[in-house]
Image 1 (cartoon, rainbow, N blue to C red):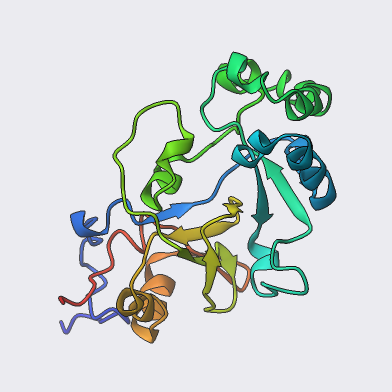
Image 2: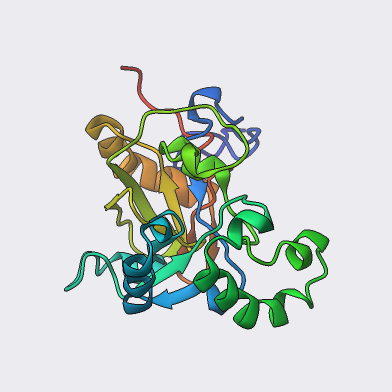
Length: 231
């Protein structure tokens, strides 16, 4: 019998492609705060920073998948900001009392009902702080736990995790990225061009999953296995 070929030129009986070491530590799903209290208006963030410059280490513009296509919009810094105490212990978080007390009043009621112990007990931290992402783009200095230093990227590439369009955006590496985004630690235009290519698009639809008419971009099955052309 003549084997049937799929769009990525594999047969229907082929094994799924393996993850490639060269693609490790490059593509990530964004942060998951878990608690609406982590999200604050831009005016609140500005007020806190005006009270003490130390708040610059814990409040950042925040963007999600639905906002990506309209970026930068009328306000490049966005109207929503997010509190992030990274992997800090509670005594360090307390040194920022405006943010700490805000979270204690708004996040604890939700987090105290969580099944996962660390989400209950470390309520001031994001449920998934994604250190791999932020260290890969050169922001490891925020974390208490030591991580390998990597060059700081001025921009990152981002895509809505679930979307029916093949659109990517360059975002400044001063933001925090929501779990509805896939973020690529890519700093060169060559790889950025390949990520946006029709070949990658076809690979994604073949290796990803779908939700109604939307592609759900899963890094483990799409990006980690994607064979970039050699330099």
